[in-house]
Each structure stands twice: as C-alpha cells, then as structure tokens.
Length: 209
Image (cartoon, rainbow, N blue to C red; front, side):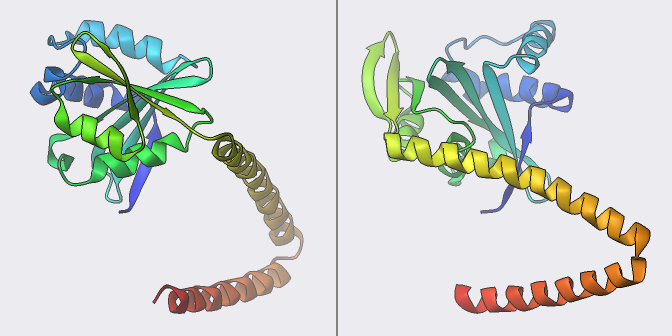
C-alpha cells in the first residue's frame, strides 16, 4: 500500500471541516454536533500553530486524501484519533496509516478514547496492541505502551533521518560546485553514478522475487 504524507497546512482547512462533519465520523465523536465553519476556523488557527497537536494527512500516490491521524501530546504520552474519507473506509487503510503515524513521533505511550459502540475502532486499536484501560462514560480508554527498546529504536531512527537530511543538503552543495567549476567532468561522474544506481535497482528486483 503506497501513500504520501503531509503535515497540517492551510490547504487542509476545508478538508478537515468536511470530514469532521461527516455523519459517521460525528456519530462516534466526543462532540457529535455539527461544527460551524467559524468555530472550525478558530480551532484550525489554534491547532496549526500548536506544538502539542500533530496532524498528519495521508494521501494516495495520485494525491487523493485518505484521511488523517491526530496526536495530542501530553508529557510522554500521545492521545490519538483517526478519521478516513468515506471512500477509504473498510478497506484496511486504518491499520496501515495509524501504525505508520505512530512511528513519526517519539512517544512511548499512546492513548485512544473510543466510543464503546464503535466496534470497528475498538477492533482497530486492539489489532495494534492497544489494551482496554478503563471506562469513561460511554467511551473506552485504550492504551498502548511501547517497550523501552522500541522507544530507543524510534529515537535513533529520528536522529538518522535528521542527519540524512543534512547530508543530502551537503551533497547538493557539492554537486553545484562541481557543475559550476568543472561541468564536463561532473557530468561524466553523474552518468557513472546513474549507471551504477540502475545496476543496483536490477539486483534489488532479483532479491524481491
């Protein structure tokens, strides 16, 4: 399953508004009333500038929005919620994108507040090792705690990702200098790199068969 991820930006305001007011989404929300656009705009403005709220928008390879995963950060924990566009429900997307989203943040405890009538959501969180913690009115609090080893593992990946980004920038700077002062020689080297990358790609295909 191939998808793209976008962090929350102004272009998502109407999408989140429409999804939040979807009848099926509202039925199992803490606040199941229709949200007015003016109130949504206030929430969105506050949310987009918050360091405590992280929202990831998931899209198909062809840029069709699948849904979102939201994390509310409270100390070492993250309260999680998920909603999918109508056309992507009941197709196995929820588990994939939620599992992926958990790896985007470095927290060792995830908590979900699930309506006790929402059998599908309860099943989703259980399939990802969330356990029933306690009841809160008509909602079940479900909790998932990562082992210390896994938390450290995710932390290391984050550090590697940051270093790789910086190194990619260094690589581009080097490439600019090479083409500026010796374009012919630089082009030859790039041609060789491209050829070898293609060879690696062919070998990788053999491994995946």
